[in-house]
Image (tube, rainbow, N blue to C red):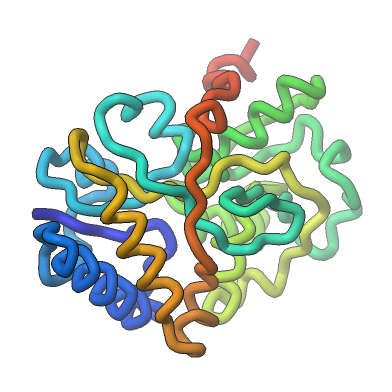
Length: 252
């Protein structure tokens, strides 16, 4: 059995994630669903999604749409009550250095962007889809491998901007001083939020009940640290927008 909640799990909020998992685990077991004792933090997150013994994971909707539809069971989308988003959705924020004269995303056309990965909805997919739709000249010049490294790349001048999902910025803000060097100048259209998944063939109903119960039972401190307010079952078509163009599109 395998469980991981990797998307917003950091050393400074690890204990809160452990307590959330403990409540989910106990709720699953009470409903007759076997669950591992602890979260796995050693397995790379995409390797975890592919495991046939996946009890619980979180997936970003771009890799879900491109590689995992029909290979895992979606449970529900996370709801962080983010500004400008319907329940169960999130969006990415355009961040630039504070001294940058840009005040809206359109001013960034052609300028070097840092992105964590081309399979990240928040770091690449959302802005790439917006750029193709609006005719914006995107220049994904620097792959960093992680949102925190995209933040640091912009703060240090290695790139001019990045798009970071609003919940990630919220999570990083207390402990990543480079965020103080940045300002937000706009947002992408919303996308389905991080989605809880389990192995293909598992019944999602007991998972929804256990996760919802665990979130509702969080203490005030953990609720504030995690920012997780609930889960939302989105219709399948919510995950079906046109896929963003590949990186090669911008070289043409």
